[in-house]
Amino acid sequence: MQATDAALLAADEPAPVRVLRPEARLPFFLTADQAGRLIPARLGTLGLDETERVRHAAWDIGIAGVTERLSEALDATAVLQPYSRLVIDCNRDPTAADSIPEVSEATAIPGNRALSAAERKARREAIFDLYHGAIAALPDRRRMAAQTTVRRELAYAEIEIRQDLINGEAGQAEWAARLARLLPEAMRRLEEEDAGPRGRN
Image (cartoon, rainbow, N blue to C red; front, side, top):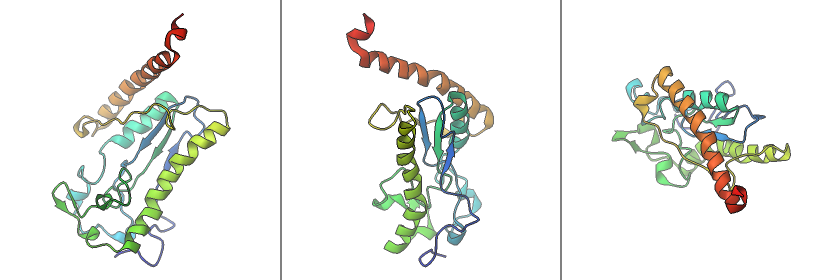
């Protein structure tokens, strides 16, 4: 079933945004665009069986667990998006054809075939816009509260972790601990570089 005449997400379905520690102490701001594999009930299964819905084509396996642990370890704000990227990919320009793919990793997605402009708009408004709206609003809110944030017009990094390394809790904990150690060190080095010779006198 396609959603064209009612809200894509029912009132009892999970929100398209999860925010962890919005008042966090440290300046790191974490995002996970493809942190889940939920599909709105109105879209059924997108024509896919369970095997296809749990594959990497549908989500970034393990990244939610890494982000949750890293948010806790760094006391950092995190924003996660729990719906499958097969519904709409929040790491793509929503006007691009592959933001709602008809084929992903050689798998045809019947529920994404020949969508109308209204159907694409419904997905964007229900998921993409709310997720990116939260990402845009939180740094402003933190700035008003005199909390520094690393994202907006400042240094940032996009981190990819091989899924077989984080498909279990042990790997997720290991990578979160590794990043919790490395990210503050990377920020310290950037601050030293920005300070220039004056910072080393």
